[in-house]
Amino acid sequence: MSQTRTLSAVEAATSVGAGFLLSLGMQAFLFPAVGLQATLMQNLKLAVGFTALSLLRGYVIRRVFERLGRRHPPGGGSKSGTHSLETGRLGKCTCGHISDRGSVGTPDGAR
Image 1 (cartoon, one colour):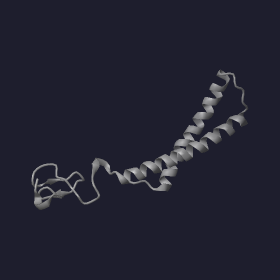
Image 2 (image 1 turned 180 degrees about the vertical axis):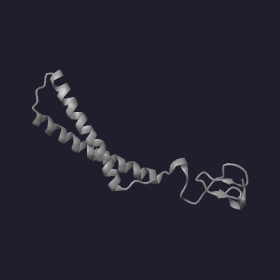
Image 3 (image 1 turned 90 degrees about the vertical axis):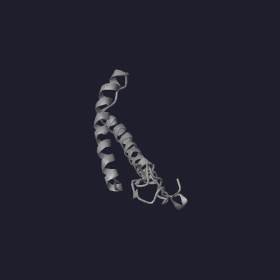
Image 4 (image 1 turned 90 degrees about the horizontal axis):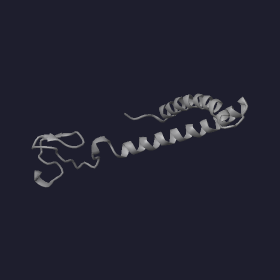
């Protein structure tokens, strides 16, 4: 299933929104534990900066993998029109097509 750019952005935003809330909580807990003192406003600014970066990163990675998925379909199928049968004269090629022409992609049905 292919995902639209808009849905990719919504998914990334949802994930990053949850991460934003978690980061505020972690900053409030960890900063004092390591001797850092930050106001709520400083924590918010820091969290917003990292959240924006995380949103962009999540969206770009999602789009890269979406593009890679279209170039290399699952199961190693071929879009070039050359198919190979898994077994026998009547069989299914590696990309899922059913053929009764012997070994598709070889001359005269030779195996």
